[in-house]
Length: 75
Image 1 (cartoon, rainbow, N blue to C red):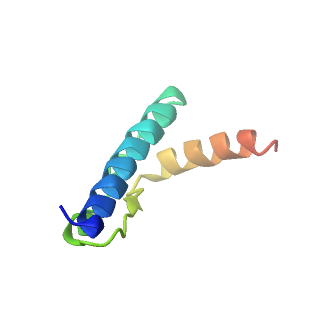
Image 2: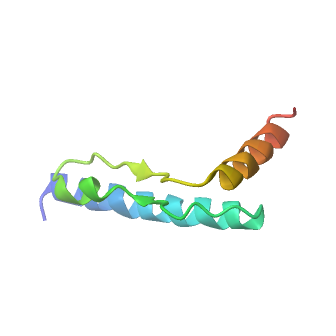
Image 3: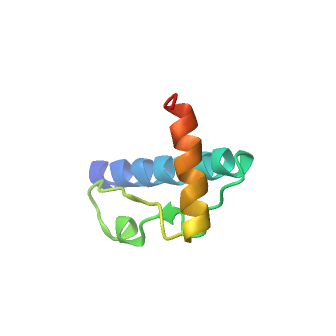
């Protein structure tokens, strides 16, 4: 495996792990982002260009996310 492919694989594995971690934290606050995933385009690059797709969600979920973030920001 080339250095570039290894870096891409490491980056992708890290992105998959942070997606799982974010999903778990959000679930504990009652929030589910149904489209949370590693951006599929990420898998097509040899160089590490890892992106996390936070996805789409409805207005209710968006409001929940805003409330959680505001509490975390001390508002």
